[in-house]
Image (cartoon, rainbow, N blue to C red):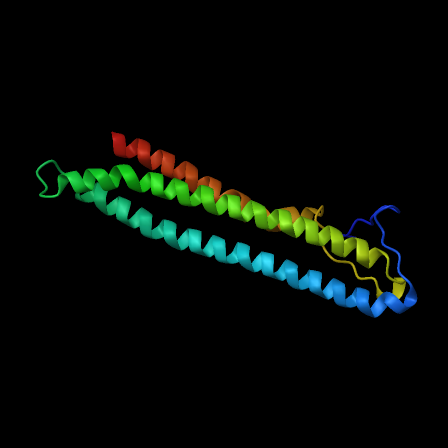
Length: 161
């Protein structure tokens, strides 16, 4: 079972007549979860696409650099600044992803408490915020921005040589 049962204090009790309203509230929480996951997807996609353009510009500046190049100062500037832009993007997106993951945990906790209070025939087993599946599923969102940040540090070190 992937959904740990909330403790007695965390379970919300309802009257039988409240069940239709509670089910609609659970659906609203599900919509909120989908919206947060969509935001993470969009942020990750945007990060990877933006970083690929910046990496391309950086590689072009490094490959084109030579002391007698007509725009040597511009190439030197790009080789210096692009790693900082890449690092800044990785940090900003990572912070936004952490915010979305925090919101997801909150919404899932609320949803799980409501589901636990439903009659047994209406309860469903969903992946909770504390599930190992949840952790593995979110691993790329935690790792990719940090790896990109480290790659940019290495690229910057390379550009200094």
